Length: 80
Length: 419
Picture 1: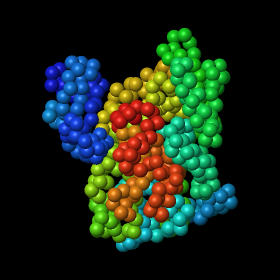
Picture 2 (picture 1 turned 30 degrees about the vertical axis):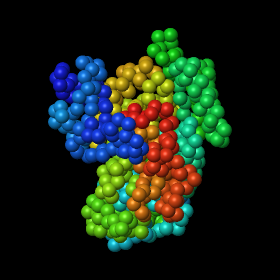
Picture 3 (picture 1 turned 135 degrees about the horizontal axis):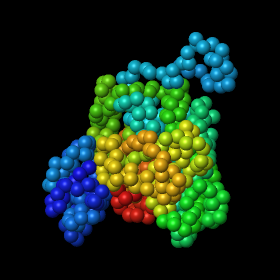
Picture 4 (picture 1 turned 90 degrees about the vertical axis):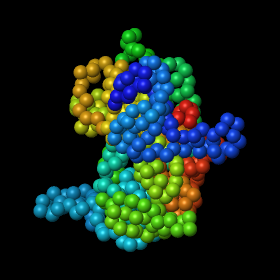
C-alpha cells in the first residue's frame, strides 16, 4: 500500500506509523466526565468503509497528517 | 444425519464402498423462532451452540453463518493451543480451554488431531529469561505445567537453531509448556458442527444477519437474508466483524479490526518437533503434518477489513525465520493469507452481556481466538443460558475499561494496533 505523505509524496506504508481514528473529538482539557474520556480513549466506530485516520511519516519527514482510506478496500482518498 | 464414528464404522464403510458417508451435519430450513440464535458459524459460535445443548439442555438453537462452515478465522489461524498467560483471569480461562482441548476428540466423537507437542518460547536476553521465570512461577502456582530451560537444554531440544556467535539475537534459554501444541483447525469447526447438529442444533449456512429486532431495549429477533427469525436470546460470535454486527444493535465497542497474516512454506522432511516462539519479535513457527513450516507474525498495524496482507510483514516474518534457522533461507513460501480480527485496547476478549437485554457478545479475540475456542463456547453458553457470566469470563466484561479492569497481558497499554 502506498501512502501519500503531504510533504514527501507517495511512499510505501512501511515508512509510516499508524496513529488511529482521526474522527474522534478529544474532550476539552480538564473535562471531568470520566465517561466522555472513556468513550474517547476506548471506543471505536471501526467502520467497514470510509475512515479518516492519523499517520506519521516516521521514517521520512516525520510529519503527522490525516488520511482518508476505505477500510473495506484499502483504497486511499488522499490527505484529509 | 451421521452415525457415530468408530473403528467399526470405518471398517463397515471400507467393506461397503457404495455406502456413502452421511453428511456430518444437517442442513435444515430455518424455523421462524428459536430459544437462542448465535450469529456466526465459526469455531466460537459452533462451540457455544454445542455447549448450550450439552451443558444447559438448550437444543432449540440456531447458528447463522453468512458463508459456509470453516470459511472464516477458524480456518485461517495457525492452529496453536497453549495456556501460558500471566494475568489472573486470562491464566485460568486459557487453562480451562487447554483442558477442554485435551478431551475434545472424545467429547465430540471427531478426531481433532490434538497434538501436544509442546511450545518453547525462546529468551534472547537474561532479562527476558527472568520474566519467563516469573511467568512459569505464575503458571505453576495455577497448576499449569511450565519448565524453564537454560541455553544448553534448549540446544538439546532444538538443535537446528542458530547458536553461533553471529546470531543477531543470542538464545539465552526458554520456557517450555509440554501440554501446548497444535490442533487441526478445520476438524474443530466440523467436529463442533456435527456434535451440535446431532443434539438438535440447526446450522444455517449462507444466512447473513442484516439487522436486529429490538423492542423496549430487548433483543427479540434478527433480520436475515433468509427472513426474520425470532429468538429468546441472541449471541454475537463474529470476531473480525464484531463492530460491524454490533452497530446494527446500536452498540459502539472497544474494538478495531486488523489483519493478521500467516504463512506456509513448501513441504520438507520433519525438522521442527515443537511449537517454537521467539522472544525477539512476535514470531512463531511449527511444522504441519504435510511438512510445511507454518509461520506466524504480528498484525500489519493498521485497521482494515481486507483479507489481503501487506508485503513488509511478509519480509519481516521471513527475516525472523531465517534469523532463527539460517539453513531455511532457500525454502520458498508456498502460501500466505490474512484473517481479520478484533483488536481490543488491552488485548483481551469480551464474553459478556451487553446493554441490550438478551443480546450477548463474544468477540475481541485479538490473535488468541483459536486456542480459546472450547472455553469461549463453554463460558458464552453459560452466560447466555443463565443471563450471567461464568466465573471464568467475569473478567471479560464490556465495561472493564470504565472500572479499571483492563487485562493487559503484554503490559503495553491502550493500543489496539500494538497489542
